[in-house]
Length: 387
Image (tube, rainbow, N blue to C red; front, side):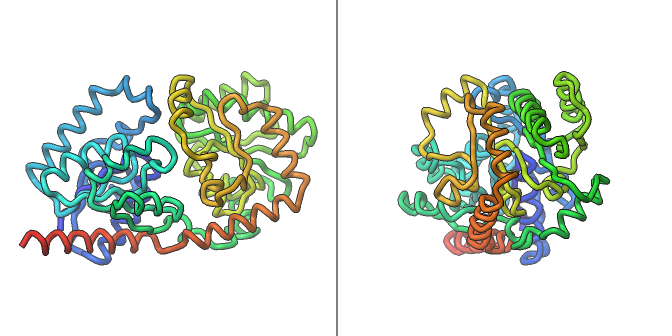
């Protein structure tokens, strides 16, 4: 069996890695090709283009890369049409993948989209495009299912692999201590992780606010320490430059990579909205969520948004479980005030942990194997119909 796949982000690479492993267990002769990251490549995936060439976000930002993205799209479409795979799987990155899925689907190749686009949140008319482009949507979260069922689009709830891999107690105190040992920081004391994002633009928009928030907290409690993971050497240099501009060094630990260990070592996490909020929730770490977009992207997104929250813990809970601050509300007063409340209110932290545990139980479904089984069932159905 030959399987085409495209992942355009680090989170998609992680999903792809688990999916390849599960598909190989069920179908040992399967081969995989398309675009993937280092984790997928380590599993024998044949990536035609470096995955980072697709890593672009927002409404406006992709325009600068449009010629290259169009060329990659054309080359991939031509390849898969000339040499049809048994199934094509687009992993997240809907802006890129759905366009390719549409063309491939029109050539009678079974298509799957893994990770529901946020049609339930904004741009709900996109559901019609999804219906035309895919044979099956693999959804990670329960709240996504009713919208697809309402529009009669085939969907399968598979849960999230992180929920399978992280213990229900988040690893407990032993996990926290082990992470601090690995990071070579003091085992005692209170640590706050600052995670403004993995891209240059995200750090430009949130990094200074996060550092100034830490400075405010240090004035109230000089015993606090702050952990800042950086996605790569360029982001590490960017954060170090920001720290120097803000006039701080003591009490701050900056790491290249190691975001998972940093989160595990922390007591509280201040972070950008995104997949990292899910991991913090599964680790049972109290958090404060912030996000800021370019003015034009925010103006477009805010008009289209159909849900009251943007962070995954709140969407999954169906209520404001964690504090989230967007755009103009990302202020030192707001961020420091909420973190200070969590530092001093044990009951608030306990309530968060209880809410996080309920969500964890609902999305711990064996995602990798569920997704693999659903894909192979689709291939079998399509094969039977074509005979």
